[in-house]
Image 1 (cartoon, chains in turn red, blue):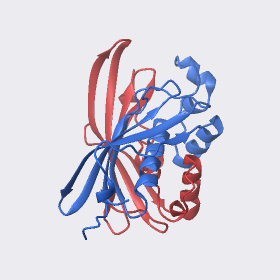
Image 2 (tube, rainbow over the protein chains, first blue to last red):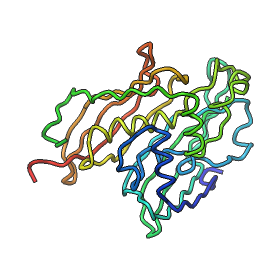
Image 3 (cartoon, rainbow over the protein chains, first blue to last red):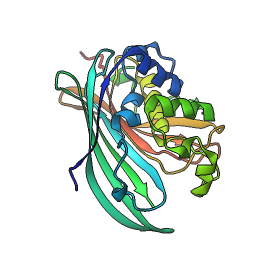
Image 4 (cartoon, rainbow over the protein chains, first blue to last red):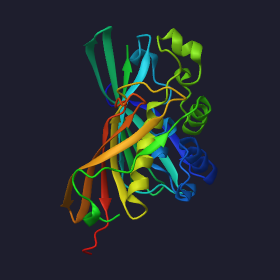
Length: 127
Length: 140
């Protein structure tokens, strides 16, 4: 199961997408109307798990634990990015309120020229 | 901002946010995160949360803005990580802060590392993390 693909999304990066993202952060820097703000890479549509399989999350509650994002190349209007998320790790811990399942995913963001633009590693907690 | 302007221990100019529930809905739509925990109070309370909570990824995006506001267009954010340690609630102020902890030259890049975090109105660090940036140098 480790290494299996959880989500793949292709986005044609356009001005509206970038503007809406910057507006949601309330970051008014005009730079983010043509170039993706860091938050764009952090967005679930880019480095999220899509609709992850239920067997990974058998317990009631699911929260995000954290993330790590690496930025290699700017993502700009007109880029076509392919975001591929794979299951990187699964482990269990005993918490105060019972069992905690940790689901670690890794996402690569590759542009239309095949260059790695960004990478993400995020943790979800099911409890 | 140049590499030479940075000193260890230096604090980043804080960035204050006060996300409303409306902003959480905008983030949900713009970022594609439709988890009800962030806009449906009944859903949030059924899971034991006092109300809807701010998306961790939105707080990460705020920390991204803290860094890009500080380094400007000539600097480059290389890496940002954070953990969603505590919940934040719409209507509460979230103050993004940071401090320089390391600076060094590696592979001819001028690198600065910062510890970064968000603080709630009680001064608790709810989203601690790290950022690595490359800055231009006056030496070149």
